[in-house]
Image (tube, rainbow, N blue to C red):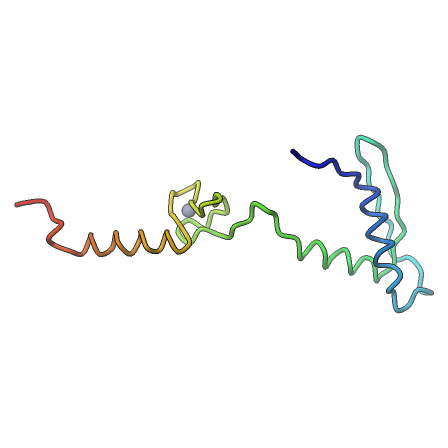
Length: 115
Ligand SMILES: [Zn+2]
């Protein structure tokens, strides 16, 4: 179940949490952020310090579904077993073990079909 979010409240709480560490609080706001959702809208005047903090927070965010990039097709849709939903490659330690075994089998003439 998805926990409901109140984006304006999250923004306000973030700003309050960060603004108190502004080394130059007298410099004032440098940006206005507007947020409009189905529940309403809010506007925030934010300092350079807060804008930088928001940018760093956004850059640091990783989606919980982000499991990296497939080394075969460069796709980003790896499931929880690190199985690529686009090309089928299996990643991780198990994927490497399976791939190595497949390479050995392919190189071993004793696995060739009888002539
Ligand atoms: Zn892939």
